[in-house]
Each structure stands twice: as structure tokens, then as C-alpha cells.
Amino acid sequence: MKHILLSVLLIGFVGVLNSCTPNRGCTEATADNFDVNAEEDDGTCIPSRDKLIGNFTYSKFWIDVVSASEFSDIGTLQITEANTANNAYNLNFDGNLFLQGTVSQNNLLLENHVELTYSYSGNGTWLPTDTVDAILNVTYLSQLLPAPQVYTYYCSKVE
Image (tube, rainbow, N blue to C red; front, side, top):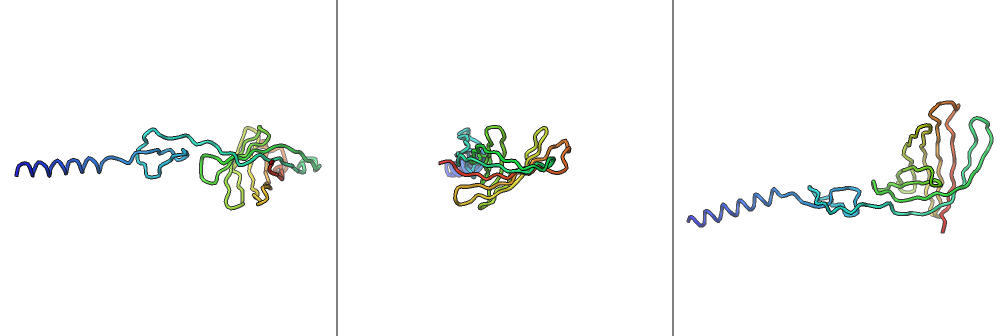
């Protein structure tokens, strides 16, 4: 009888210990091996990397809001899948201007990005022919311009 009681207590104690043990795994949401069921991080997270979607050339058109003159320019654009969230992407214009956004179906939305003297926002369309059309609104934060400067980008993927 004493052994049976001791066995029942031991089994109950082990059961309580097992029920209190959290599910361990990678809890970093942006990691390549993120475990949605993990309650406690076990240190095995593999950092996610931005994945290349493509390199693009762009033609940029705008009408200067001060002089009312038309301008155009060409350059390069690299688009990568961002490791921060689902459907997020990074845009790197000529290695100088870095913007982020999200894509829903074929619609692009640029996040509002503020630097010391400029504010960037915009939207666009990802076309099935591997081209991207985007409208980028640039506002000088000094408010010296009569209206935001709007740039239209037409991008084609480089093979």
C-alpha cells in the first residue's frame, strides 16, 4: 500500500513538472526557423536574410514644382523581400535611397520614410511582366516648396 501511494505521488509529481515545462524553440518572428508554438527561446534561431527579388532599371519622370520644367532620369533599383514581415519588401534606389513597403496582390505601398530634409511616401503596381510602376511623393520638410515633389518611376527587371 505504501509503495502504491508513493508511486501515485511520484507519477503526479512528474506530470506536474511536465505540464509546467514551456515549449522551447525559436521565438524570433523574423528568423528563418521561427516556431509559432514556442513559448521560450532555446537559442537556435537562424537570422533571416533579405532575399533578392530582382534588379531593375528605372526611368524617373517629374515636373519640378518650382520651375514647372519637365525632367527625366534613369537609374538602378534593387528589390528584396524584407525579413521583417510577410509581404514586406525593400527598395534600394542607386544604392543611395533605401525605402521599405508592403505588397498586397499587385499593389505596392511605400511606408512613410522621413529623413532630415525629406519625407517619402508612395504607391505603385507590380505588373505580371516583371515591371513595377511606382509613384513616389517627396516632400521637403522645410516647407519651402509650394507642393510636394512627385516622381513617377517605371521599372523593368534586368535579366
